[in-house]
Length: 502
Ligand code: BGC
View 1 (cartoon, protein in one colour):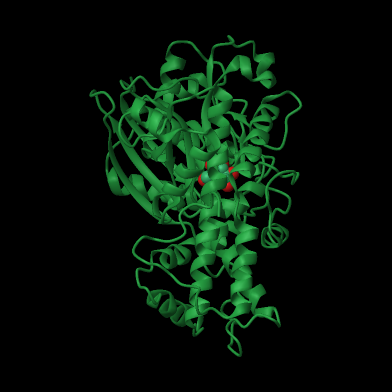
View 2 (spheres, rainbow, N blue to C red):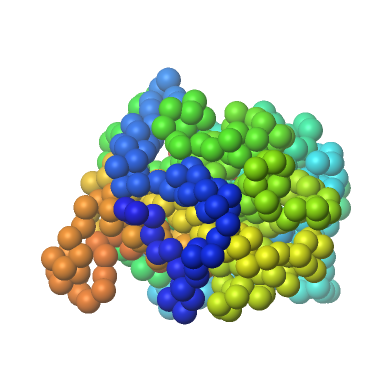
């Protein structure tokens, strides 16, 4: 088969030789459904490029392409002490970051708090109350008894927010399964600040950022070849640095055409009109049953929140087919529970080192109460490979589209998130897809760049929502100090609250 990436871990051969016909037929059907060949990857990338441009136009498109008012890469000489708050999809993290004199260095202390599941569908007051309580706890723990001046805060709010200013952000829509009333269409900063004020927490928000913008800036701080920041985690998205002249929807701001401004693409919304992505019936169900049907089409095919659910839906569907003998006469009620399997369940299956897939057998038994046969295990393993490979290959289309749009023939792309960091083979499968999309001649390009290197490499990023948020706060304070206040709502407040940042 052409271009579906590595089929097997080298240590395990796998075998379909003694597979019953019904399961073999299903494996073939699933391969056809989930494989994305090179020609399709290229077509998706071309459409992606035009959609990125459309998002920057006055009329707009599906991909929001939000200007972030982060207006330069760091120099590496940013300094000061900052707080960073990271509200992602799964955890809440509070950090204190010291950017010292040494170029590209940082110190960080941090505390993590689990986002309680019920908060995601609770009320706005509960959400902001919880966030403010965590911040307060952090400050009390790390600065007990100190008289704390207002520390500048970079708040990483990893949802689509349109920003007229760096210190505001109107939530366009919740993603990643969040569904909290009273926040969509509202500026989240006053809601957050009101909760802080109620608790007497002495913090001034300097910058509201996206995790991808943080990743872009933090990665560029330590590697100036970094041009794109990506998250492949619970959700997925990317940010890159654009020239204002390429952003027609900012024409009214009269920025110099070569002024840099980071764009948070919000590419999870790519192809919401369903023109190009090879959606399966399972992707359609995921969308239909989600809190925001019709939104985040791309994300729902590749992000960590959905990989386990796609897998689960396929197995439930196969079990319901009279002509397929999978888990016959077994109680599959545990498997029938929506979102009961997360991406780590799939990772573990792909990582199962045993020829007889013993670990997979055991986890189906212990987690789902299902006893699996050898042929069933072979199908299960192949299904995880197909779902994981599709996610990596489609992700590469987004990266290739940004690089092609910007004309980058060589670049580093900083990536973070649980899928990128933990899902087996995600990096290699993504790199393979980039090679196919961009037609690299491995020998020639590899020689030019040095052994084993691709012209565009997706590499592990620095901590975007910690160090990146601090850096963006520092960059904002610096430009306000220099009188460059465009895209800043409260320059005086930021200066008053920022202490001695340099
Ligand atoms: C959000 C983005 C975020 C991404 C990764 C998506 O669901 O809309 O803002 O960058 O997840 O966390």
